[in-house]
Image (tube, rainbow, N blue to C red; front, top):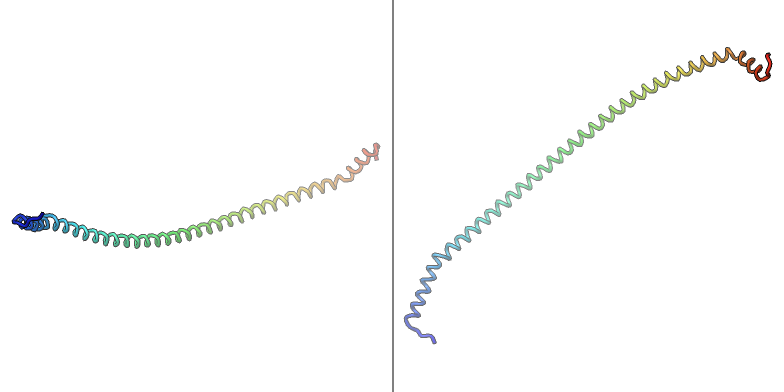
Length: 141
């Protein structure tokens, strides 16, 4: 059974004093530490958001510069290809012209040789014909 005497009052006073002491020594410093930590985290989250925004902006700038550089590189490559194609076409035309000239020269020479052979054969045609006829007939004509 509970008896109401002086010890109950002392226990109540003891409890109030302990509550004030613990509040001053333990609860307030822990609350302050938690509050400071919360404020610090909020500040860090703000900084993180700002850094992420800056990173996105810089990435967009880099992407834009890369696209621009890629376009310039493609244009330079296309120009170089066109220049190389033109040089190749010019060289090919030059080689073809040389080959055609050489072919024409060779045809002229061959035609001359054919003409010479024909005229040589034409001059000896009568003697060849009589020699062949004598060989075929087996007697002299």
